[in-house]
Amino acid sequence: MKEGVERTVAVNRVVPSPLALSSHFSPSFLSHLSPNFSPGSILLSLRGSISTRTMHRRALLVLPLLVCLVESLPNQQRCIHGKIAAGKCECDDGYTGTICHREMHCLTFQRTQSGGCTACVPGWEKSECDEIVCEHGKPDLTSMKCNCEPPYSGEFCNELETANVYSHYNNKAASMNPVLLSICIIPLAIIVWACNTYSKKRRAKKVEHLLEATVNRDLKSSHVRQLLYGKK
Image (cartoon, rainbow, N blue to C red):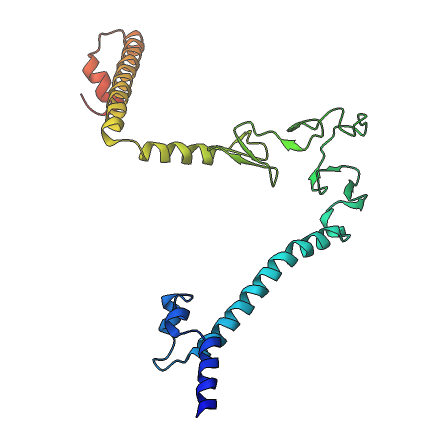
């Protein structure tokens, strides 16, 4: 009996009470435990949690070392148009950039002391002629292509196509406020009507004078208009 009591005391000294252990766990962890859990099962769970955290910490320490190791290995794929030399890319002729990914658009084969171009092909600029010039748009510095403003198009946004122009202004007119659109259209319609009426009168007068000179008699303007336009 005495030996059994001593074992119980020893277990109580080694294994803390459930209330003491519960302060080390989150409510979500304790909710997964069965109602009949024992202090020993909590210790096993605690031991597994500690080992997992230790593995995570070791992984965080090893990860930077692996990154440095990979970066230090020779990698020919990093130079798109060139090769690695002394840890840097040596670009092939006609290419530039940190990984030799930009094409140089030099006008001639002559180069400056720094390896740049003496002159650029029209549409390209900078010392190495590797930046595109967009006349009516903005360049995409990654792909070196122009994002043109409508209705412009072309490689350098300097071209105008009739279909694009019509489409652009039709869309612009459709998006206008109806009141503002009517304010613009009504005066224009009046001007067109006035010009058309004045043109018809002038034409009738010319025909009238021509006929009068031919037949040697006066003609009524209404008869001439009826002859030309089918109405008085």
